Image (tube, rainbow, N blue to C red; front, top):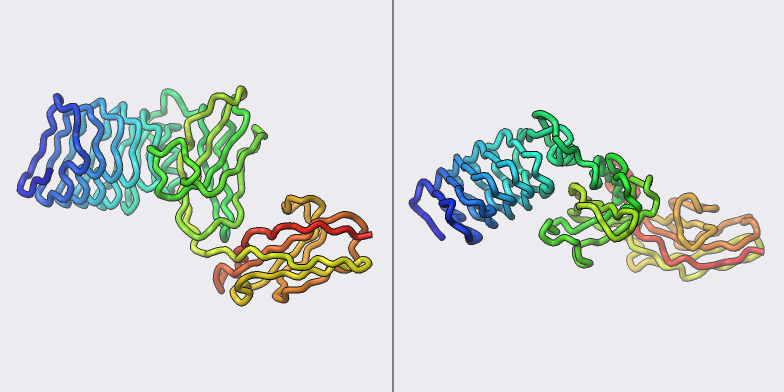
Length: 354
């Protein structure tokens, strides 16, 4: 529908179906009275630059993708009780929105639902989903009362920190009755409508069987825009929680290449290792380790040689035993910080020192 000259639009309560892109790019539309219980469709009022006032009826469950994106004149909107979801870019670019009250019924807000709105303040009940969402996204939040049913049956991501291409995410607390947690790094375009997330929508997964393991660290993530989510599984392993809130991360540095160990030679108590990458000039150096197990993790390193730019290195006076040798190359995040950004570990090679 294109309404080039219409100033006001009313959707009657009797309407049972509304098309996507209903009034997109209607430059003169100023007011909308949405009296039906139908969800706000995708891009329904996207880029309606004069839209100032929107009244939504009770009973709406979801505001869909980019429904009000780019409505630069919009100053306020009432979100009715009973609303459950605010989808991707629903209000992005609504630069004149100063505050939005999020009802306690909302259980999903996309990470970028309110992006590009400087000075926005979200309001809602203490311990509501909206309060945790605002904290994770760094949006000011004003408590108005307290949620009748605080969220306890799903994970809440309270902290997601980036260092180079390493992302560490932490839950606010344990989920009562949870048997395990699954942490995911997703493509930024993955939306709630895609849940459960399919294989082509996430790039990494960490599964924990320790019910107290409420922190997970992803190493060597590729450059790009991603988002982190978590799921709890309960004792019988047949029931899962709702997904956690989503937290966006931006990684600006492409990690280094994954090297290949072309030689691991033992002579007496010395171990000589040769490392190869496709583009050695692009790598700033290598860290090489001898470890006691096949899985190379920090606490299992026994011998480490760091910051070597040469492709062949030697471990000297190694104690007798069985080891796995592996290497990973690194680049620097930038000249100022000097932070190493590592690539993946090479395939380990087994050696025996007698």
